Picture: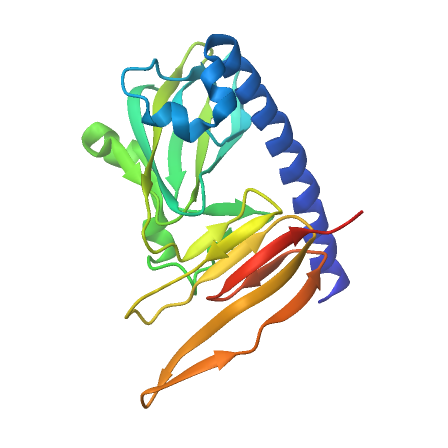
Length: 257
């Protein structure tokens, strides 16, 4: 790994950990003030029918890991804004526009990207994602409300937006759906057990972790060759920078500091 790429990975790691840590804490704290059930986990609240939907304002640079409704209102010209959306590894994200008030002709834009972009790097990569890069961008100024709902192909998505006029903005709702066969995943946590399975499909899969971690590969099946299943022996790897893991079942434990 080249020094420049390693430095880039470390910068991305610091950025995401800081952003996600602050945002996750604020979301849980703000929501818990209204509904203590959120302290039991977002999934429980999501399953309780009739409970009020979680709502809060969206910041120009934000990370969202809870379903709910979010509203951005420009207080001044906001030219370079983005929201990172992340769900559980076995979930897909749906973004639904509730209200949009922007000036597309005046240079505003509102785009959803199917994945994440960090330091010019896309996740999943163009080689791993099922769609061409051009089809992964959904521009509101092109489609309008004819496409109010946009669903991701994995557990992460991004919203890019620019709003010039103070008072303009938009409101959207995030919902999640189960993904029976998660392929490309970004982990929210440095601990846990994860499985990637792609039955009867010829495609690449990747698992990205933004934390230093110890990886234990419990079982790895690379495919079938003339009826012979090719398997790899369990192994342990210590990883301290950005990386991708291809199609495997494994245990992950946080690196001791």
